[in-house]
Image 1 (tube, one colour):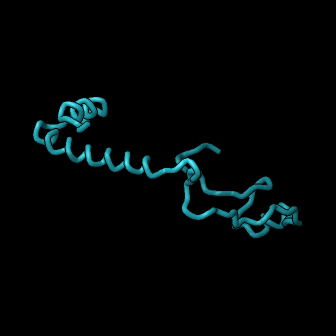
Image 2: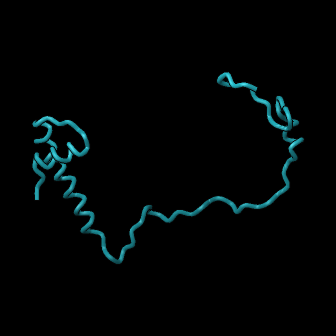
Image 3: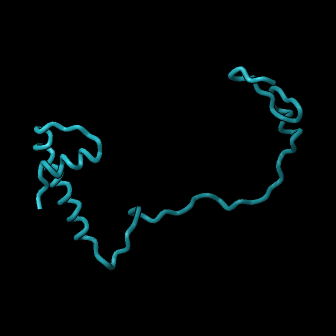
Length: 98
């Protein structure tokens, strides 16, 4: 069943898109071709082939989390340009109060 200009006008109304009569006449056959192409993809899909999101399997490349020794707070703050009350000191922004 081919899409009509009225079908496209209804879709445009639902999408809140304003189309002229000339645009409706041009878009109707184009959208019909798109819908037929999508329908053909559904015909090709076989029951024995599982749906996939990627052509190749994905593998997580991250390492496992391991607990390791870390720097102390004092060591970290020693390398900071400015520290205050055991925290990094940064300039005020947007007129914030202290």
